[in-house]
Each structure stands twice: as C-alpha cells, then as structure tokens.
Length: 338
Image 1 (cartoon, rainbow, N blue to C red):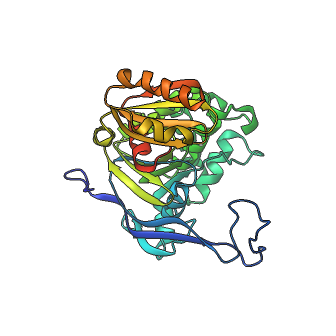
Image 2: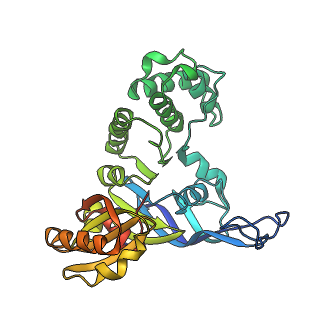
Image 3: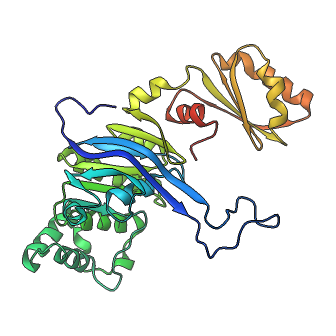
C-alpha cells in the first residue's frame, strides 16, 4: 500500500525474510515424538517476503496472534535479528550494513520490562543515556522531564521493584526516548497490564504520536490497533495478509455478521448440516467452536440451534460479532486472532 500523500518513508522493507533452522543437535522427530515436533535441520519461516513502508510521523501497527512474525520483524528492524533474505531500512539506513546508525535513530520498548533493578528509576535513564554519549547533567535533566511526561516524576528515587507493572512500562518508554530517537518501536507494550494501566498507556502513546514521532507497535489486541494506529498490517504465520487504515480494513471484512457457537462436543460434526441452511455465507469450525457468517443472523440462529439438536450437540454459548478487524482476520485465516 502506498504511503500517505506527501509523507517520506521512515521504514521500508523489501522481500524481507527470516528462516530459523532447528538445531542439528536436536533428536530427529519420530513416531514417538510429541505432536508438532520438528526434525533437526527443519526450517521454520518466521517472516516471508515482507514488503512494508511506514511514513515519517505515522503510528503503524503490526497486528496478529502469537507466532505471526511480528516480534521477528521488529527484531530485524531494530538490528537484533539478522534477516535471511531481503533488505530493510530505518531512517534511510540499512539495518544490516549500517546497524550502528540505525540504533542511534531508534528507541525500543521490549515486550517485558527489563530495567536494571539495582538502580533507581532515574539512574536507569541516566545510565542508558551514557550509551549514546549524553553527559550526566544533560541526561539527568532529560530523565526528569521524561519521568514527568510519563506521570512518574515523583518516583525518580524509587527502586524499580517499587513501581507497578504499568509504571515500569512507562519507565521503559522513557528509557527508549532518552536519546530523542526518530522512530519508537514497541513490542506488545500493554501485555499483562490491567485495563486502567492499559488505557493510561494509550494516552501516553497518543501524546507521543501527537508530537510527530514515528511509532511502530506490535499487538494482538484488535481494539488497541483500531484505537491507536494510523495504518495496520495484519500478519499471520509470517505472511502479510492485509494492510491499510483501520477503517479501510474493516470495510474489507465480510458484510455479514459472524455467529460463534460453542458446543459440547466436536463442532466439525455440525459443519455439513449448517452449511446447507439458507442465509449462511460461510462455515468453519475449530474444536468445540463453530463459526458461521450470515447476512441476517436473527433469521439463521434458530436453524443453527435445531441443527445442533439434531446432531446431538448441546450449545453452551452463542456470540455475535459485527464486521471488524476480528471478522476480517477470521475470514482470511478461518480462526480467531487470539
């Protein structure tokens, strides 16, 4: 998808690919090996031929479930992971051949806070600033300004373990910003946070975006991507499935409503009986869940209930989802985002 009009690219990838090889020291999978185990030397494609462009000043989201390739993509863009093929540029610098230059222009917030717990909150920032040649006096001023901006200015002398989970994540954002980077990367920044801490962190990210910063965030929360991002790339199993603004992507979702039936038993036993019902657009199943897409859900629910009864399956829950990023993902993959 082309960049917004008049915006230069802050990040660009061309046929980016990452393949991991199962170590040779691993025992070869055999008839008694655990389900899903791979033989030594087998290849796992984490990212497959990924083409992305992120505009300067854009809030860009990588949306997908665990194992989609989001974290690997971030790892390549932040120079921590070497690509197997393809190229990527951040702020005009090649992530492989100009890795030092890339690292000088980016800030990274990891999925799990990793501050030095032996230092105070303020000392964590001052120590990190030294990596970028920032003097102690300047770093101390920057640290207090950032802590104030993050709403934890009064906790500068506290030890890290005295902060809540949400406060520690704010500290990680402050640390990533201490050297005033051009691009901020956040890997699943709200995982593990309670709803109040998550909403508070959203406000901070909106404010940073309002300052004109380029932000790239991975997430598997649909609402988070929908609420925060200018554009979203939906990934699954290393593949880019769709890309665009939240509004444009939701417009691509199937026009009908998804009806999700949880049954006591194997939902696959229901697929044949329900696919023949009038008004049904599509049917898929996974373990005890049957997913049906219908233009007029109110007219088909009774037929679904009767079909389940005839098959001998008891329905334990019925959930309806209007067109959304979730329904788009289900239509592309046949399974839920989470």
